[in-house]
Length: 261
Image (cartoon, rainbow, N blue to C red; front, top):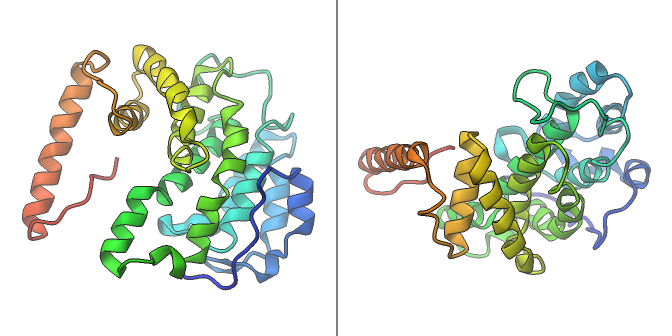
């Protein structure tokens, strides 16, 4: 997480992607490696018809604004742009495999949803609590970029939510995992009941360890009994994570964070 300069406005609704691209003062926004002057060209390539060009643009467009799990001034407009292109024809082709298997050639839509989810987890309530433990109360007053991202969650959620019933299991499961941390926003908590239903359907079919962990954690945090949804792999993973936490606590004098799932 980084300190940032004057607070950037955040929209209540998701603007068109071209408006975001054209009307953002990218050169004035901080990234991990300077300013965002080069971001518009990289972001524009994310909607190129050629999947190889889109693939090569992902790192240039996304890495500078979330390097080392940090939130920068340019993170919010990039996240809004990414959310705004989730329904772009170049990003939502009709040639999905049924479950969008993981691998080096995952669909652009899955890659973008993964990035939104990872970024939302980097700005979630747990991260704010940990940062408050390290730096004191009022951390969001000091870190404007983090607060701006958290304020923008409803606009981002609107685009992610639309994919929860996608034909591809890989897409809808990734969308669900991205929606979970976004739904911490006070204006979105009413969606947690419906998200829990999607989560139980994921647990009934998916073997993806990361997806299952995120859904189980969310259901427990929302007060749901998950005992009937856990399988042997979930129990083994939970016990493994508990051992990691205990070991880390002994290394750190009794203080530990959750393992890096």
